Length: 392
Ligand code: PLP
Image 1 (cartoon, rainbow, N blue to C red):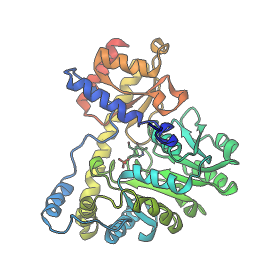
Image 2: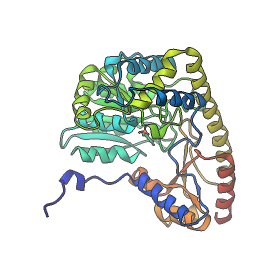
Image 3: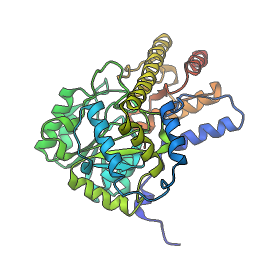
Image 4: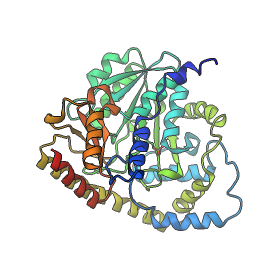
């Protein structure tokens, strides 16, 4: 038989998804597992969403295709949401609803990447960026961050001349870093000087601990037209399975992305588009209720973050305290460093039943790290730390 496409041979399955399936299989085989590997909030959906789901499910007519870019009313709602929550001003024509933020990354890279194009990813990075760049025949070029996981502008500038686009993710998975306004302004200067696009993944934008406001590079002067913002409702409302994300971009880029979407997924889940729009547009009371339940979630993440950091201090494990998102990217203790991060994670799973993500999944330089997710109950985190203490 002839080979599969060269581009698919060059693309790997998502390492995190694969590892998560392995953890679940181990649990199904009877092992007592505490997973601190999750990339999704562990909360049940906010009650306002639950109620609206029942309403929408009982209405006729929500089973049809929607416009490729999403229902107009829903895009109006997203425009309002972005303005109210992030002070960002986008017209519905500049908004595309996507099946999760992941599709937003796929569409934006599809619209911008020609074979051979160099696309900069900032390490540590979410490995999906690298794989989608590979899929489109581009070349992922890694720029490292500083020790505190903040942008190293020099590193980016060094490769900028040959670069087509830079992907940033703030608040960051896995490090929890939130790039400051000054950092983003400096990156924007480079983007303008070297004529680069920026894809800004802001999916964790609402999950911040000490930063009052979310900063987007798209809000820096002259950046809106060269930035595609990727965001969505998965993390902020604990609705990962409903797959509702969106992109914010110039109309020109939006039209380019729609060429891919109209020939691939066709449209985004009609059902959940209606649920969100009914809540966010019809009554400010429900909008506020939804924002309040997301705020409660954020506060609970904050408590767990502080507890986890305290426990890691007690164990003598090094980390940079996360400023946002729900992960701690921690250094593997010295005595285990002879093993790779994958070996250490398997050892931890085998000996203690605690599951974390190996650092190597986030870049070649991070084989002495693990990512610990605190999207798990406080009891689970306490128990996991007790178990880790025994082997460490
Ligand atoms: N971007 C980052 C950095 C993520 O960590 C994730 C999910 O873990 C996504 C995007 C995907 O989000 P969604 O579930 O909306 O596709």
